[in-house]
Image (cartoon, rainbow, N blue to C red; front, side):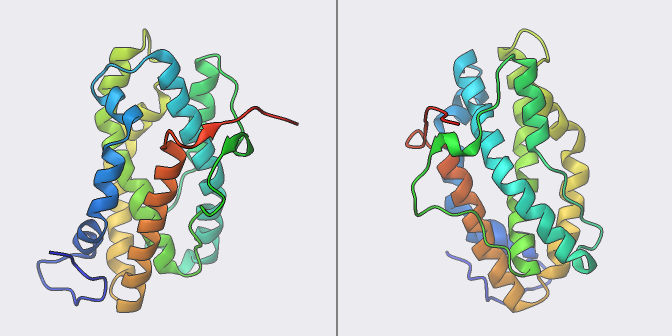
Length: 215
């Protein structure tokens, strides 16, 4: 049964549950990504592991500034939540793997795909739900990454997820539960979460090619 964003909350239905049920299809589609599946199954090649990092780096290079700017605008409504940029972690991993970063403009994305447009605190909370929730999955991939690489060099992001995921998810839940008291903000959260899932899905899609870099 589909859960609408405008449904009233009950004592047993948290904002997190409303978001989870409203975005379940997008979440499951992401879990079917070929690169993430290969990593989870410990069958990923080094080249594909590098490609996964390049795609994540480009995605967060685009998203980090958007979310950081939104946190600055809505600082009075964050309830203790603070964003930590991810692209520097991926840059460090790629350096450890002796691979130069590839800027976002070197990827051939569909022209109609745009990053999430964060105009209100509900939009920010929806994006935070996706990017912070991904740390829980990232912590589970830490052991797989350690198994496919000869050393921890290049595993920095997954280690960061394992070390920080629980703490950051708890802070995110406090944030979204506070913001989600408003029906209008809940609707914005669902739309933004869907947009953030969709944007990541495009960056990780095999249809999005890494083009030649022309400076």
